[in-house]
Image 1 (cartoon, rainbow, N blue to C red):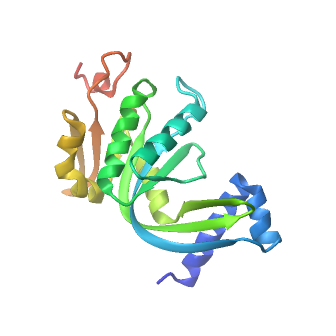
Image 2: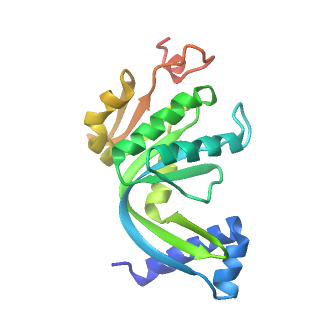
Amino acid sequence: MVGTEEKGRLLAEFSINVQRHFPDVWRSLFEERSGNAKFGSAQRTLVCVECPVSGPLKRDALLASLRRLARRHEGTVDPCADEFAFVSFGNPQDALAMAVELQRLVARARLRVGLASGRCRMARCDAAGQAFLMLLGDERARVRTLTLHAAPGSVQLAPGAYEDLRDAIDSTLGSCIVMESFEDDELHEVSLTLPPDPMADLSTFAGLGLT
C-alpha cells in the first residue's frame, strides 16, 4: 500500500520528468486535463547505463544501440534518459544478458553499468499522442547510485541481483572477474569485469594490473 507521502513524491517526480522530456504531454495532463497516467508497481530488474555527453561514443548512437538490445532481450527502455539511461526487465537473466552484450558492443567507451532487482514504482502514461512507461522512486535512484560507483567498463550488481544471477553468470559471461565488496561481513556490491577486447586500447583489466 502506497502512503500519502510517497504518492506525493512519486507524482512530483513524474511531473518533473514529464515536463523536462515531454512538455506537450505535461501540458496535456496538468493543464488541459486530457490523457491519463496510471501508477503501479512490479518486481523488476533494472539496468542503468552511463550516457556521457562527450567521449568516443556519440550519445544518440548509444541510445539507439540500447533500444535495439532492449528489444532483443525483452526489456523496456525508460523514456527519460539524461546522463543515465534505464531499462527494466521481468527476468534478471535477460537484464544481465543485455548489460553484457552492451558492454561488449561499446567496449572502447568503457561505460559504467549498474544492475539491481526490486519492487519498482512506475507510471504508464498515454497523452498527447504518446504512450510510455516511466520508472520512478527508490529503485530507480538505487540503481543510479550503484552505477555511479561502478568501475569504467564493468557491470556493478546489487547483492540481491547477484544472488539471483550467481548461477547464470558463468554461462552468460564465460570468463570474467567477479569482485565482491563487503561491509561488516555482509555483501555490499559485486563488480563484473569482462575479458578485454583484443582490439581495444583500454580495459578495466589494465587498471587491475591483469594485462
